Length: 217
Image 1 (cartoon, rainbow, N blue to C red):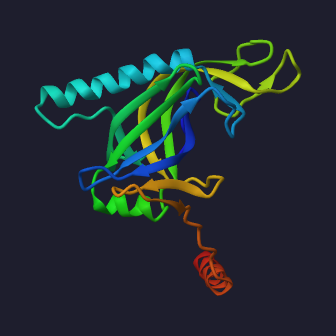
Image 2 (image 1 turned 45 degrees about the horizontal axis):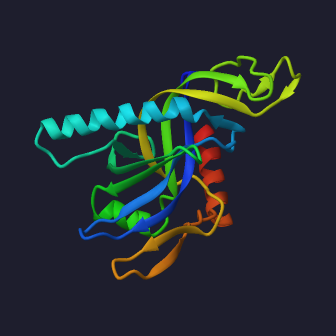
């Protein structure tokens, strides 16, 4: 799916799944921070903080006014329309310039997928307010991954301002590291490995090739 230039998606792996008093755990992870990501872009914390506060405040007011259990933000699955859970905790670390998110999966099915490592992190879907070269501050196009600075005459680290957050999703994007920490109710801990994608067997690949050739005839 092609996104408009000003929109983007950013992935951060989970750091912890913590069992609480209820049936479902709290999934902890980074929502955004001021470090270069896989696109060599880094989010400006000063613009991100109020955007996350507004996103969370709207969800809080909606659910409170309706007499529902409180939500601090919508969590989806794979940036689709399916609900994956809700944000339950939001933490701003001003010193480290990090936004941390705690969420609760919607049901045991999503909980099981998280525990098995089928979803490995958060991905925020939002839009840029601005993008600029992190070295010379030359304004750059509002397009994810477009990092060539004409003034520096090279590809650079890009600093960007956050305009809005549409939603945050549980995603299966590949991540580095062993996995995220699962803290159980009894205080014990385990590291949950990320699920590895299964390679298509050679026989299956050959069968698909034959079918494709037949379809062309």
